[in-house]
Amino acid sequence: MAKKKKAWKSESLNSAQKSSADKIRIVLCEFAKGRHPAIEDPEKSFDILAKEFEKICALSSEKEILELLAWFLNTDALLENVEEDTELGEAFEDLYADANAFFGEKAKNFEDRAYVIDLLHDLVVNTVGEDARSELFLSAKDFLDNSEIHRLVDDVLASLDGNSLENEEQIYAALQDLADGAGDAELYERLSFLRDPDRSTATLISVANAYYVAGDIKDAERLLKEVKDPATPEEEEEFLDLQTGLLFKKGDKKAALEMAEKLYEKFPKEYHLMCLCTVATKKRKEELLDAHERFRLSVYVSPDYVNMLITMGEFDRLSAYLTRYKAEIHLLDKEVRKTLAERLDALGKKNLSLLLKKD
Image 1 (cartoon, rainbow, N blue to C red):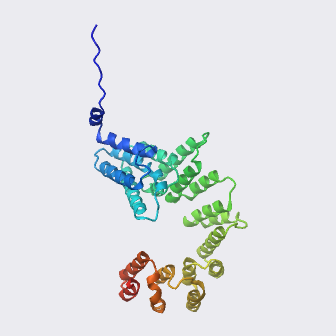
Image 2 (cartoon, rainbow, N blue to C red):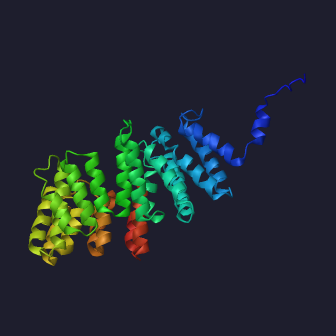
Image 3 (cartoon, rainbow, N blue to C red):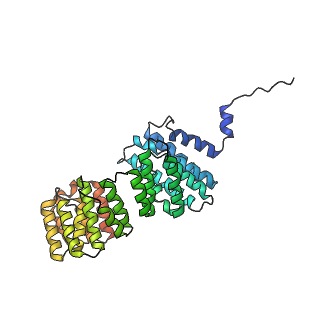
């Protein structure tokens, strides 16, 4: 009887036999499943993932690139350990943004459309609510046509049917992003009320806004008629803002102005003030801006107010405002001052930008 050859197990040999894609896949799977030893160290995780992304970009197979980009985006749960408003948080944001953009670029012309939809299906079903992959859902219209988006949504809903998934809320939010990004108000309505069959005020306003953005005044009004008494200040602000917009779209300027005044009085934010000023008479606009500076601003130099005046082209007023409080300008965050100064430079307002640059 012939003797059986003894099989020797060699980790180095196994590693040598794996393709570049296999090696990338192993690392990403470990992160996606929460098992990678570096997962509790955000800085180390970033360094590893950045290198893996570079390796993905160097691959030649379009299919492998798409698959591994999907695995890459499935690692975004680790962002729970990363502080957003930090240098590292911004670096992660840029890295995932590059992955989203690269996925969209490759998916757009990939012939096997079913494969692209399957990858998106898995990304939706495995979402945990982090922002990283949401950009992909919001931009899906750039690489999926309308029928493909509907097929993807129906496939995910079929996966939800009869299954109790812990991340069901996040899945519905992802599907709403797909519909929102596609500008498909009807699909957005369908998904919103599947998620919230009780038709809460927040959902009604959200769906009405989707129709408003799509230019469908009739359906936007249909949804707003169901809203009785907004329960929170946020809901009331959104409700009034939407009503104001609808009145302007319908051409009822008098009623729209009255509603815009009401909105600003209740919620005296720069955004509402700017919208009101664009339709108010010149005299009323000056009254509103004077009163806002005297009574509404809680800080000496408000970056939101400065930004609003730049947007409105109110440079004489801005000059007077910054000159009046030039001793307090240095109290503004340095990065905020830099951003505002750059806006002014781009508009050729060098003298005003210099006021913001001085310490």
